[in-house]
Image 1 (cartoon, one colour):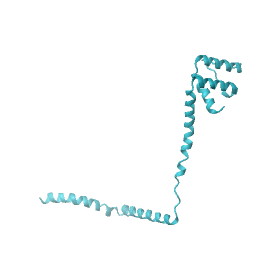
Image 2 (cartoon, rainbow, N blue to C red):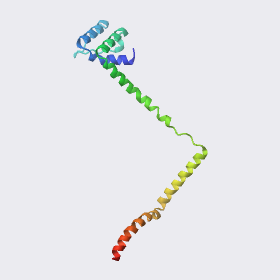
Image 3 (tube, one colour):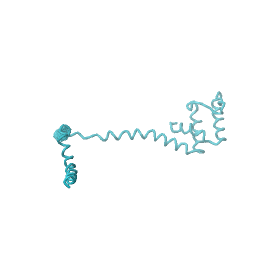
Image 4 (cartoon, helix red, strand yellow):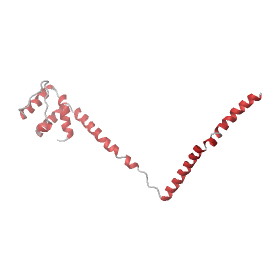
Amino acid sequence: MGTLEKETISAGLMNLPDDVSMQVLEDIKRERPGLDAEDDGTLELDIDSISQGLLWKIHGLIMKHAPEVEDAIRKTIQGRESPKTAAKPPPKKKNKPMSSVDQEHHIKVLEQKLGTYQRQSSGSHSQEPVLPTVEDESSGDESSGSEEE
């Protein structure tokens, strides 16, 4: 008996009709005479302490009266296992190693970009006037035109 069946039994006992639940309870007490129900009428016991034959009988009753329980348990188990398979694809996205020629070319391109950014940041005063000059020219024309009139 596997995990699916045991979890089906654990979850499915509450979904059985009352008469079937009483029959299961009697079977368990017959097999384990020392067990007594709690004050609230529940019975706690380790599922592994019940014989395989009785477990299969209980499983059969659950499948007969509440088959949807096992379907729900199966989906839950698959949901737990799904993240493991989902975690495997990212390693497949490894970059292919570049040849030394490609690496050197890539380094040169990056150095050029870095140089461009460094020139812009260190010579920001020379770069800023270019943009404001265009804006100043249009603004300056309007201002100049207004001042001239």
